[in-house]
Length: 105
Image (tube, rainbow, N blue to C red; front, side):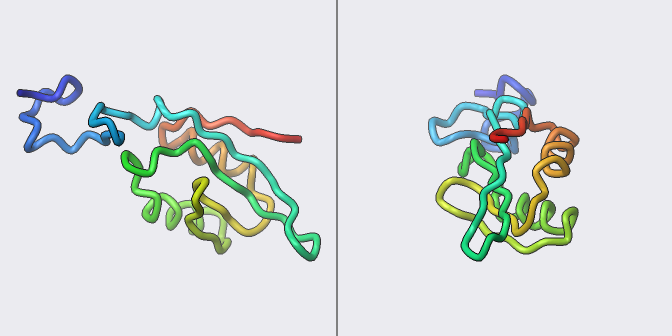
């Protein structure tokens, strides 16, 4: 069998796949970026809607932290960065091919 996207044999295919085994490209993921106020009146930016199987969350987090010069981590919901970086993250994620949208106010 061959992959429908890259037309390589499934053993050689490197296309991102979801938990169900179907190809899940970045533009097919409904990514939302929102701001949250944390303890001590500090801001955090939360990225949700990423498929944890099809997306290398640790590598993506590292890239986003470098672009925003901020700390952060992988959470159960997705990714979290310290500070208010919502607009910048939406632009960076769109540049990477994700269908990202700003959420919240």
